[in-house]
Length: 227
Image (cartoon, rainbow, N blue to C red; front, side, top):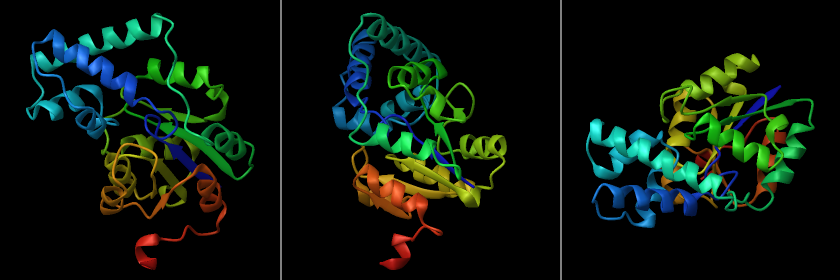
């Protein structure tokens, strides 16, 4: 039995545009210069307060807590406006359906999103029933802390050595390595593939079909060793 844990933003769905728009509004509200899109992308995956703190290059404080709350207000307003939800990347919905139908695979999600935000995305894309275990920013310390992975492993009764973390961020790869799981980086997300490799990705995939092939293999080939 294998446990496959997907990151959400930048891996399953393309959320950078929405996240960046809300971040711009938040920075405006606090009289700060708007961040560049690349800067926002670099922190996607972290818990929101830690992401904002990292963007400002300072520790968590009362103003960052206030900015975090304001961001959530902007994000909720976007949701309630009826605007389009984040689209899934090509092939991801089909991949998840394929893996969910297998008897030897259990699926989960490990994300820096709130539980409410994750629930909205999964429901919108018809994925709620596909995932056995989910961990969010409301449940665990921020990535790259290994708690999200380890708690999903414990819930599923599967050892980290039989677990795969699929993600687009350096924090996903670091989290997987720290937990003792296999780290698979995706090239369609927000981090450079060289950074994913440096962070411990055993393989970088360019399309969803490659993930199914790797998961089906008796033992995942380690591209770092092959090179």
